[in-house]
Length: 379
Image (cartoon, rainbow, N blue to C red):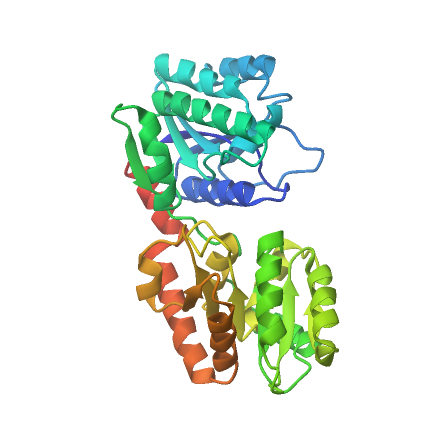
């Protein structure tokens, strides 16, 4: 039985992709028989209990005093200790420039701990402002320190390896791809799906969905595409799944008043309610300005649930996507192609079925949580 010490800035009930990912990994490792400890800042809300996962809330954990307390707690465990750090720069406080936590990890490595780092986000770009450029420089210094501390760097997409490897400065650090599974469990509930469709599929046509948090760039792409879809009278409903969907629905209806009564939004849903809303959709429209990639949890959810999808290619997209047959892809700036693909699939249920089956197959073969746990436990 292996022992894991997962260090993370968030964990349920906190909302966030890093927290959801950490929970899935912790539960998967515990389910495989390993001893799993999660170390993080406290939250006022009760945390979900999981058999085999021991969650340790340490006040001020990423301050100098908090790191000292964390170190004392870790020292109570037998060596060698394996630390699994969930890295996103802004998650560790100090306005995303917590050099101290990186130096602390380097110190732990020098004392004999094994440090694995899962890179969820890399660093800020230079140039948008003086303050951002200063933070971007500090992020790169932090990256150098982390690469000196780490035995292994796990990355969600190949682009992260390309960006981090130069900062190893010639040091032999092992990099390995670690899939990011969907954080929306696949547990098909036919009655729940029928209830969603009764509420939102008001027309006789298909239900076109989008799942996500509706960030500025995604929102812009959605509105550009949906403004053009169905201009010739195609019969369909639109369902926005996630927080801020109400705002996007209102913006769309201002541009397309002819869609009145056919644009719907769920708002923020309880975790258990997300799956039937995704399963109720005949087609998902999931555009991303930087392109689809395996780090996109909203796309992973559609893939896991076997949904037909239209999505975008961009500079962060892995090469395998276009040949996967798991979705319809177009360049993120080709709004006309994205609009055409969406319209075609809305009228072609057989094509939607083929895409959905290919999506589910690709997810099982490449991204399922079992792949993550196998990679970690055999490393």
